[in-house]
Image (cartoon, rainbow, N blue to C red):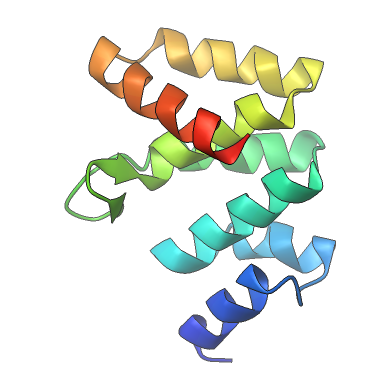
Length: 116
């Protein structure tokens, strides 16, 4: 399937929960962002999802991982951890936020407010 078509199907909610999690491994910004959006919307959370979001949190290079303006996949994944709002996701969110500078923290908080 074409990646843009997949991205559209994710956005429209036509992808199963298991497939959404698999989409976090597809290195395409729109596919990953839409998968994270659906995961947040459906409040899907387990150890596998948290680990994948933690891994994606490192994707903060604005030249490669840019979504909109200064937002990156990494910022978005950290925000999703907060929005999922489970004890494990919040624990990981706090650990990742502790590593960020104030600029990146503000970006994550703004994204989380927009998602939530």
